[in-house]
Amino acid sequence: MTHVTGPCGIRSSIGRALRRVSLSVVLVAACGPAEQPSPVRAPGPVGAVDSLQPRGPVLRLLDRPAVMAVERIDELPLSRVEVRWWGRTDTIPGVLVQFIPEVVADSTLTGLDWAGPTLARGFVFRHGARTVEAVHLPGDLQRGGAVVRLSPGGRYLAYVAEARCGASHCARVSVRRWPSLALIGAHQLAVKWGDRLDPRDRIDWLDPMRVAFELYDGQRAERTVAVLRLAAGGLQVVRQAIPR
Image 1: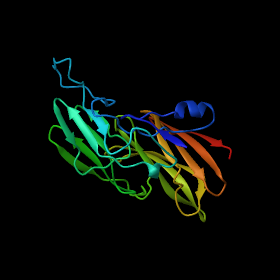
Image 2: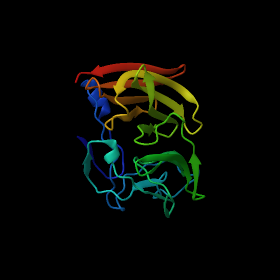
Image 3: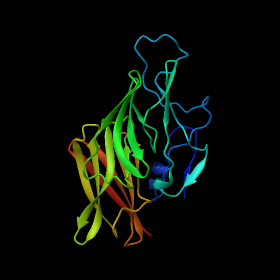
Image 4: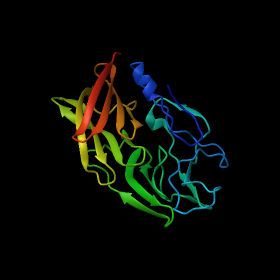
């Protein structure tokens, strides 16, 4: 079971789990009271003198209980996002997220917007102008039950796409720059499904340059962990199969 705790923040046990030849992900936290959010901050304006002001926007997920546990990513409730910075509080209009958006710079945020179980679009929100700009998604990214995560800082997008391996469906893991979608690299894993991705599949960024995929093989009844490192030539891949 995947445990989700709050408030407002993302914690993962994936590093420790990989050292134990395992992988588990603690999903994004549900937020607690508004007066005690866990801040996600970017540098404030140059020359700011008010030491009581936060150094960047403070984000809070709404519409979630303080503590919950889920077994699959698609069981994670979608949330609106509250943004507080320099005395003003806004809710990002028309956006529902699984994970808290990434702070790009100053008051600019980026994330993934969902419409129920379907991934609808990416977005960039500029708090100062209160504008939401849509970002197109890769053509091979599955919209229903998508397995996808933005990197810390919102520079890269990692996701799983289905590929054909003879008569079977296999997994292709890809990393692209965000929001330009320029492909950094892709790697095919010999993980097979009957007709769709497994709802337990997940992605977690270990740091801004390393991403881990945990994929379940429905035909072999086992799971595989693949760790990809972003490098100058594309991706360096370390694959480690976990016995059933």
